[in-house]
Image 1 (cartoon, rainbow, N blue to C red):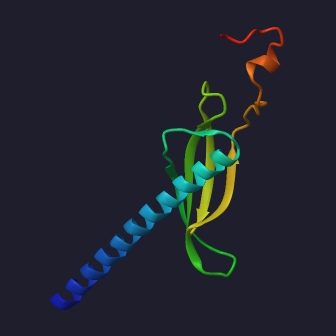
Image 2 (cartoon, rainbow, N blue to C red):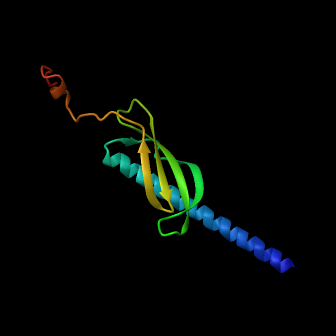
Image 3 (cartoon, rainbow, N blue to C red):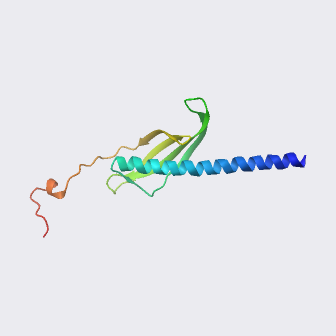
Length: 121
């Protein structure tokens, strides 16, 4: 009976260790994806961090059970505002990204904005 209890504790410890390592891997994947999305859209990824907000066990398209993790991150387009984005990972694969509406700024130099502005010597 003691062997059975020891085996059960060992299995639980192994499962917890797997979950912890898998969560760390998914967190790093979410951080990289958030950073890349912001970079591709010319936005600034703030605090180099994501925070998990939801966790669920679900099935992927092939019918396998996987963990669906939802992460929240912050970004800015001008440096003056903090906007939120959310990305969902199905296992370690990106399922969806949603972002708060943000202003798309044209790439202009002050000379284009103010034509009579003289450059500084």
